[in-house]
Each structure stands twice: as structure tokens, then as C-alpha cells.
Image 1 (tube, rainbow, N blue to C red):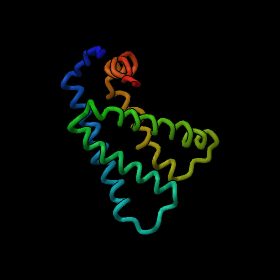
Image 2 (cartoon, helix red, strand yellow):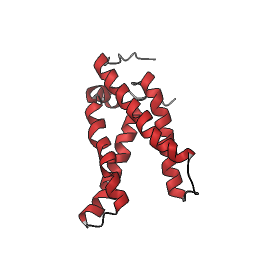
Image 3 (cartoon, helix red, strand yellow):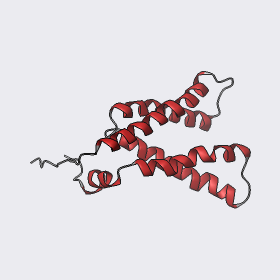
Length: 140
């Protein structure tokens, strides 16, 4: 038996804010990431290659978010969570022990901006209704 669940509707301004975030992520971050992918001068070490490939996929999928901002919203969760983990697990211990290297220090603000901006743009009441309160997908 299927029970219909009324999906809450987001106001138009929220959709445009989400589209803006996806456009920034896809175009701005994409220009940096894809430049590094297409114009690299030496082989990558394993984890660097994993990170750049992951960011490349994130930026490509973000372009879908411009057209489908609600359907692609979990991608913004991912963006927020990986940046929060980086700040807490990579940057904060180095900062607390006064051992920040130049590369980590230089990248802090661009990564930390995602920790601040993304949660401000996300429609938390919609997220609560769709991902916490709504019934889950069937198992059988």
C-alpha cells in the first residue's frame, strides 16, 4: 500500500539561491579543478589524484544542480560535510599546535567559506521534512 506524502514546496527565491550556489560550485570551483585536471605537469600521488577527481565529479554534478536544485540538494550536504570534516580534522589540529603549513593556511578561507555559506543557503525546514520526518523508501 502506497501512502502519498505531500512534498513541501520551496519558495522561488530559495530555488534561485540554491541555483546560485550550484553555479558557483560548478563554474568557479570547476574552473580551478578542471584546469588542474587538464593541464597537470606531473603524475599525482594517490590521495591527491583521489581528491582532484572527487572535486572534478562534484563540480560536474553541480552543473546539474542549476537545472534541478531540489533533486541535487544532497550534493550540497556532501559539500558542507567534507569541508566541515577538513576544518575539524585537518586544519584545526594544525592551527591549535601552531604547525600550519603554507598550503593549508592558504586554502583555509576558500574551504571554510563552504562551511559558513552552504548551511545558510540550505532550506533546513525542507530538509527536516524530506530527510528526517518523511517515511523512508520501502525495503521490499
